[in-house]
Length: 74
Image (cartoon, rainbow, N blue to C red; front, top):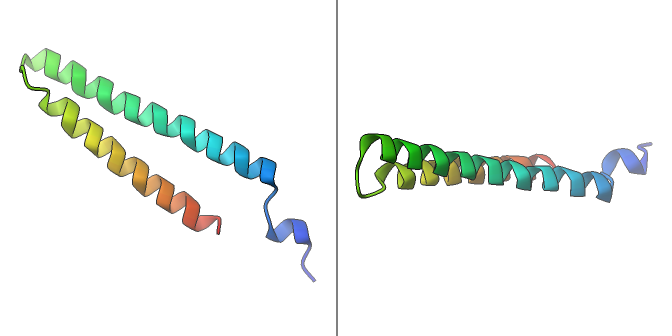
């Protein structure tokens, strides 16, 4: 017979896991925005093309990470 604790993760563990995921999201999005901003400055374009592109790529990566992480722990 299975132990109840082995089937269901502790609420504290879930809180720590998703808090870590939130910080990872902020860091990834911040890095994408910063890299796009610096690249736009370096090239000298007035319209922030790379800022938009890198932000959208970071958001796509974050959505993929969230879906992957929440599916795994169901």
